Image (cartoon, one colour):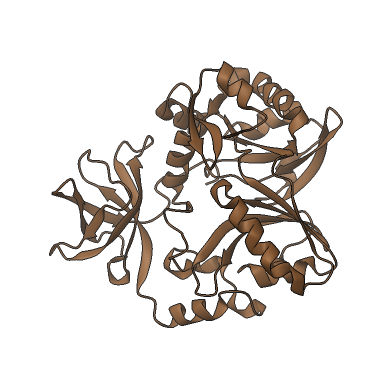
Length: 365
């Protein structure tokens, strides 16, 4: 089992630790609901250092990544990050990732922890066709800290007073120094709240984490585990690999058509996406379930005639709304806000309704 550079802090703080993506990670500290509400109302700190970190360098680096991914990197300027997907030739999703464009020949990739080795091998498998392009795995050298919540940017300003993060739009980034080490400060996140993700060398992970905590102690800052990270992202309807998206799901079936730029030129999986686009049969939608029964992944979804139409991707009790919410992959004709559905839970049928996403309004509006 691997440990992040922040593991000693989590252990000292009494976090409940679990195995996640091959790492020992905190799932909660004081409790999922308390941590969730801290992020929605004040600020929270997340250790997401288990995520994979790669550099792609070379004269043809952009060409290589354009071939490997679905979004159009040509639209991203230096200092911009972009949400993206890698596909198999059949259109199934290898992984979703964020690509940071440092310059024309240097790109920084953040990928899912559980897919990091697979992603590296998939990229390496195709890199030889792009002369001089180099792929580097920096996962074990770098830490990633997310600071999220309505008060996050105020807290950050106390630690990085020379950085005016308010001039950065969503998915833009800059660099600064902390104790002499370079830190990437990106206006990205997985909660739907204002905030940043900070990438830095392991050597200063604990000092920066503690500095942010000290700066936010009067603002109600809390450490946040993986449990609240999941409820926060689900309230926003954000995809999680292995739930809304996987190797058997085409992005057009998962509310991700906006990430697939058919006109940018050839990329792996393009033809499969074109075929699905011509005959789209399924899609991912949000739903609210009546009562207090919790919907879980793989539970079957039915129409009101009790005909099976799909399955639950993710489900939880929303800490903000205090009702059961979830996402489901269902036959396209039922993806209509207000449409009635039924979900089978332990042999019983429970009524629900399809709804728009996200489920909540946040500090990002």
